[in-house]
Amino acid sequence: MITATILLTVITKAKAQQGFYAGAQGASQLSAMFNENDADRPGADYKSKLGATYGLNGGYNFNRHMGIGTEVTYSRTKQRYIDNSVSYTQKFRYLKIPVMFTYNTNPDRKFMFTAKAGPQIGILLGSEITGASNSAMNGSTKDQYKKLTLGAMAGAGIRMHMLNNIYLDAGVHLDGTISNTEDGDYKGYAIGRAKTHDLNGSLEVGIKYFF
Image 1: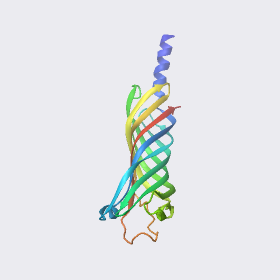
Image 2 (image 1 turned 120 degrees about the horizontal axis):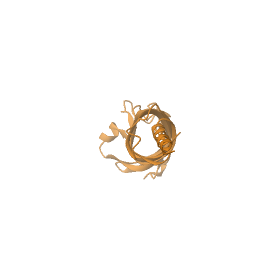
Image 3 (image 1 turned 90 degrees about the vertical axis):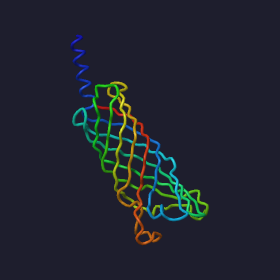
Image 4 (image 1 turned 30 degrees about the vertical axis):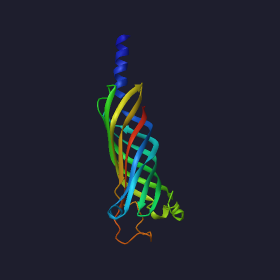
């Protein structure tokens, strides 16, 4: 009986990080819509403000260490602009979907190192200016930005075995766009304007269940 119990425990541990998993995650993040032309313009400045992301994740581990996964994350970002005598807050809402390679160290231990990285698409759900010193500027700016962006993400952290097949994740999450977030055809942008990139860094916490 004792031998059978030990054998069952070993088999359970061996499978704990192998196969399908599903989970949820959330994070607070700092963001920047970086444009070289804006950064170099005299009298212009912008300040990152805290935003939030949350969503669901899932994937498949080929073995106890490596796998492939995806996330569907709702991301709220905002940035405060100061352009000489004008100031305003630009807000964005994106749905972000990466396809990522995942890795973890020894799953038999209470704590393990994890890493993830891969390409990502961003779907613009909304964009608006609020709190402008010139109230006429407040309102939707969605037509000024691309509806779809291409980028990349990466993350690393610690995973803790909590109970049976349930694990707690905590770590750093970074993502950004490679393509231009602004719509170059928008008539308000100058010809030859540099690309604008959405850059984000966050502290992420999540939970996973391995089937």
